[in-house]
Length: 297
Ligand SMILES: [Zn+2]
Image 1 (cartoon, rainbow, N blue to C red):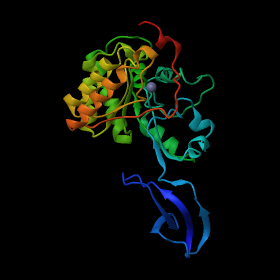
Image 2 (image 1 turned 135 degrees about the vertical axis):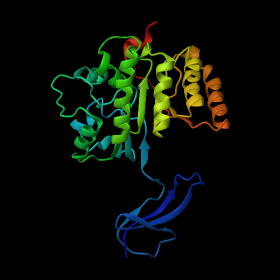
Image 3 (image 1 turned 90 degrees about the horizontal axis):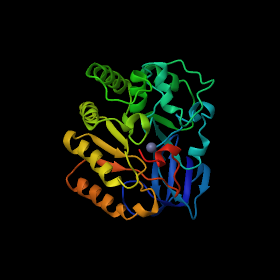
Image 4 (image 1 turned 60 degrees about the vertical axis):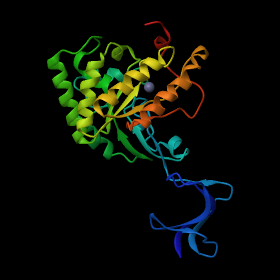
């Protein structure tokens, strides 16, 4: 007698093998048997006929933090309903920690109204402690937002960092990685990161590589300069060996659609060189972006 049996489903197990029909037996919290269990008994039996049975999805491009959803609606049931069991937040250059000054949180204001927002952490470690007290509907992991780090230091100024500022920033990044951050995200098309020079990104990539952490890049251009932007990101990975992920890969505006084949070839080449390069895509066919990103620079 098992705790649960899921019968008659088509299993996609995530290893890359083709889908197959089988039953699954669960004892306590663990899968203990996969095969023909038509005659077996369980406390609860689910009929998954005509359905797929899959491991929980990991949403690696999630914004539930900067929309404040993790606090307003910690059950995160819209994610659970999609089969997501783990969400990686802190994307596109914005995270909720570390806060080098109160200006750091301005990095999230394009998603959430900061009026009345209450927080009681500064460092990444304090942030994770706060999150661990909550009862979220899914597992949560976070990147460090580069804009969050930067704006905590230079506030609203759009300029290159001075060497001594870079030292402070790298220190804050390393402390965050040691506390449990998965890596760094950058939102290069947003105004406060548009002025960032490649050598700044290069230094960050080297730091991330040293800590076996990943770099997630929201490209500088997702329109007519898509290929140049991909090339900039791939270059960082090729030169430093950092594990790279391009966020929400797409090409904006119909006249640029023809660039997509070349974009995929660039990734194909990178894979063949053995580079640790990945991308994610939206599972829907529309785009949301702040209005100014549609204007000339
Ligand atoms: Zn983005």
